Each structure stands twice: as structure tokens, then as C-alpha cells.
Image 1 (spheres, rainbow, N blue to C red):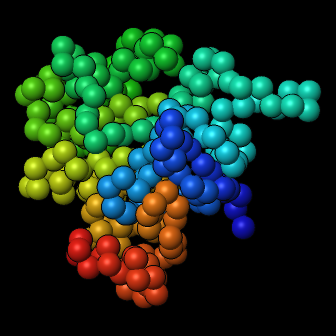
Image 2 (cartoon, rainbow, N blue to C red):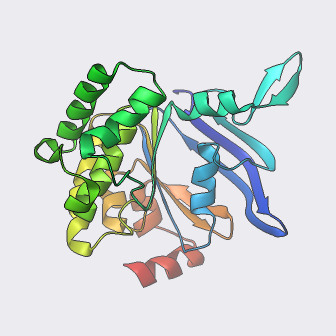
Image 3 (tube, helix red, strand yellow):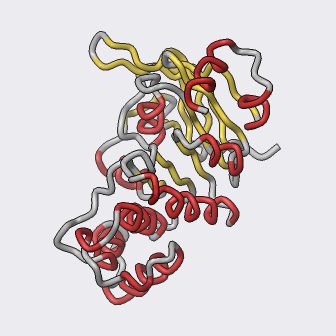
Amino acid sequence: MTTPLVRASGVTKSFGHNQVLHGVDFEVRPGEVSCIIGPSGSGKSTFLRCINALETVDGGSLEVAGQQVGYNLEGGSYRPWRDRDFAKFRSGIGMVFQRFNLYGHLNATENVATSLINVAKMDKAAAIRRAGEELDRVGLAAHADKRPHQLSGGQQQRVAIARALAMDPALMLFDEPTSALDPELVDEVLESMKALALGGMTMVVVTHEIGFAREVADTLSFFDGGVIIESGSPDQVLSQTESSRTRAFLDKVL
């Protein structure tokens, strides 16, 4: 069996007195698409942010590509990461949020190229070329010179995907990437994500799009109350669940 790219064991996370994650066990292997569903406030997004080291875990173990997230093993003991450690780690992971977080004063090409120039230290001309390639990959070559306000929400989200892909990540994280879109714009973003999945990209996707999860996911996990209640193939979780809590959730969203 391939070693998991992401491995979580007993992960906990609290914000003050509010414990959000209560012992999460999770794995995703290279080339797999893992979708996460569940009600609002169940800890899905917090867990995704922990994978990308945007939040630090309080307990348990969380590894990405064999690296304990947030700590380096030195001299037999773990040392917390410094700022440069976080920056290096995040440069290998692409993350797409609910909101597009594009720079309003830059066009699509410049939005994609800026991380290549400022983080990867790529030559500007090379970064512009790479940005054009990634925009073409998500079907936006014709809109490369447009600024965010000239693009639809779906197009803006595809620019955000292109920006993440430009850094050549080993792992892509999606935090409800279609939840801020008008219904008629959702499909264009999902089609771009399906293409990535078919290309072998390792993806962890927090989503309310059950049809997408059924079609694309290798594994599907149902989050509730800060733990994974159930995990398996989409068919197992969506059609054969024996969990009353999972069934109650699905009855409301399907």
C-alpha cells in the first residue's frame, strides 16, 4: 500500500474553551481524492486549515508527506516551526477557499504570477508564462488580462485554482470552493476540479456538492461534532450507511 500523503491520528483542536476537533483520524494517499461532508460547525474547515498549518493542532499527530506538521525533530525532541518553516511547508500545498482572495488591482495573469515571483522567486517573464499556462489549464486563457471585477464568481474561483496550481503543489485543499457562487456558476468550477482529479492530483475537498463527491471521490468522510463519524467509498457512505446520524444529514441535503 502507498504511504499516506496526509495522516491524522487523534487530532484535537480548541479555540479557547471551545473544542472543535475531538480526535480526528484521517488518511489520504497520493493520487486520491478525499471529500469531506458534514453540517456547518462540525470542524471540517478547521481540520483542513490544520493540514495546511494555518491552525496548529493541540493534540494527536498530523503528518503531511511524512513531516509532522508544525514541528521539526531535532536531537530527539520536537522543535516548533519558525516562520520560514511554515512558509516552506505551505509552498508545497495549494489551498482554495470559499472566497477568492484575488488582488483587485491585478489582472488574472498577475494574480497567478504574484506568488511565483514573490514566494518561488521565479523570474517575472517566466512567471507570466507559467501563469498563462495555468489559466489555460482552467479554461481562462481568453480572460488573462481581465481584473477580478470583470470576471464572474466562477471565473474568479478558477483564477484562484490556477494560482494554487502554479506553485506545483503535491496536495490541493478545497474549502467549500463553490459555496459563495450563484448556482449557475458552480458547474464550471466543479469541472475544473474534476479535470484535476482525472489528472491524478491528490485532493482533499470540503464540500456540500454531494453529486461531485459521489462522482469524483475515492473516499468520503462524514464529519460531525469534531470527529469523523463514518468514512468509506462514496457508495458506502451515501447509499449503504448504517449510521443514523449520517442518514439524518443526507436526508436533509439530498
